[in-house]
Structure formats: C-alpha cells, structure tokens
Image (cartoon, rainbow, N blue to C red):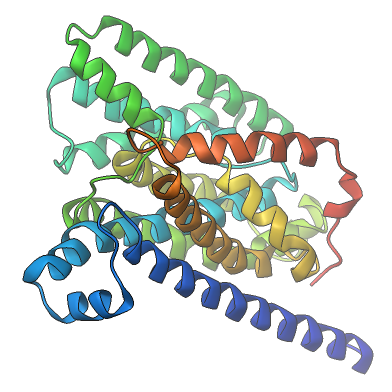
Length: 345
C-alpha cells in the first residue's frame, strides 16, 4: 500500500469513528427523551431518582415501563439497520433488506400461528422460537428454490415470492380466527409496536438479537470482498456460498426475535444503510456498525414520535416507519445507482 493510500484509509477510518461517536451521542440524547416522555412525563431529576430506586412512582415508571421499551427500540432498530447493511453488502443492491428474503413475513406467520392455535401467549418463550422457526424455514425454502450458489437476482425474486406467500398465510389465519378480539389483537400486533413491553419481552428477544448481530459484524470482511465480484472474492479466500448462508441464517434468527416482541416494523433496514453509506466511502464493512447505530436512533426517535402525536390511542410505530420509509424507498429506487459503487477497502 502506498503512503497516499494508507493516508486515505486512515482519514476514512477517522471519519467513521467520528460518525459513530456522533450517532452514539445522538442516541444517548434520544434515549434520555424516551425515558422522560409519556403519559406521565418525568423530569431529569425524576429519571435520576427512578434509576436508583425501584419503588415509588418514578422508579416504577422507569424500570417497568420506559426502560424495557427503550432497550427494545435500541436493540430492534439497531439489528434492523445492521441486517439491512449486511444484506445490501451481500447482494450489492441498495434496495435489499430483511423483507427481501421474506424473513419478517415468515416470522410473523410462525408467531401468529402459535397465538391463533393457543399454543402460547405473548409472554411465552414459544413465541420467539416460533417466529425464529418461521424465519429459518424461509431460509431453507429459499435455498431449496434457488440453490446455494445462485445469483443475487434469483435470491431476491424467490424471497419476494416467499414474503408474498407468508403475507397471504397471515391474512388467512386472521380470516379464520373465530375470536374477533383475538383477530383485532393480531392485526394491531402486525402493525408493529413496542408499547406496554416489559423486561420479560426484553429477555425473550435480546439474546437472539445480540448473537445474530455479532455474527453479522464478523462477516464484514466478506461483504467488502464481494464489492470486487464473486469470483475475485472467492480467489481471496471468501466462501461466497457460506457467506450467504451465514448471513441469511443470522438475519432470520434476529428478525424472528424482533418480530416476536414488536410485530413487523419495516423500512429501517432500507433507510439506515443508505443514510450512512456516503460517510463511510461506500464500504460495506464500515457501514455495518454505523447502520446499526442509525437504525437504533431512528426507531428510538420514531417511538418518541408516536408518544408525542396527539391521538385517542397510541399510533403503531410500524405505521410511522412505513409512512416515512415508502417515499424513501421510491427515492432510492429512482436515484442514481452509481452512488452505490464501492470505492474499495
């Protein structure tokens, strides 16, 4: 490596560190707002008192209501942003996210099925296991349809087909539900929400999300190599088929756990990587952590927004992300695709 190239890499690394530090700082500010805002507003003094006291009004509000909700918004938003960056790096496609492989949709089928059949309630460990099982089933079906060495286009088309089929199955389950109250609950749950979540929900999802996130972060070098093409990446020692399998399984596990406790929340995985990519020189590896922080910040802010909008009942967070994400999706689709060519490691 020449002195000029080494200097450029060092500058880009410094920029990424500053970016991540800035995102982390904004996330801390949003987190503070998240524990202060709600039906019973808390002052900074109340929050500080609540942190150190598990009794009293401030302690109960903080530990039983606000803190679990904050942890879930950070964990779920962070994983959605991270998984979106991983899939975009894997497929070299700026429109890729978890929904491309049908993972959230099939996870929803698994979760809705166990709720409909009465196998478990919303606080049972069977719920995330069923959702993860549904998401993993989509991975198995995907590889069965297109094969381990198939191109990205076939993966995307097959994933979209699986997602459409899963959506139809969820609609069928809702239509067959004999209990109108259960049907309403499932419909609202599918809109995406982290309202009224407890530490039990955190324990249901967080272990799976953390493990899946660590796996994706370790695969960053493979995504960087793929910017040179599959053949070149293979010549550099990257097992492209194994990289795809590992990514899809990790995304399926993480998405299944997220869907189990929050329902379907879309577009975070699309928007977060796109927002950070210009600041990381279009490097897929560097985009991973930055996208995770951006996703966490976006979902935490969206959760704040649904509590600030005046309404008779709290607006579902999935509705907010969809209203923001759909126009963003159209913008990305119509924008110059040359923006997504990697500048190299």
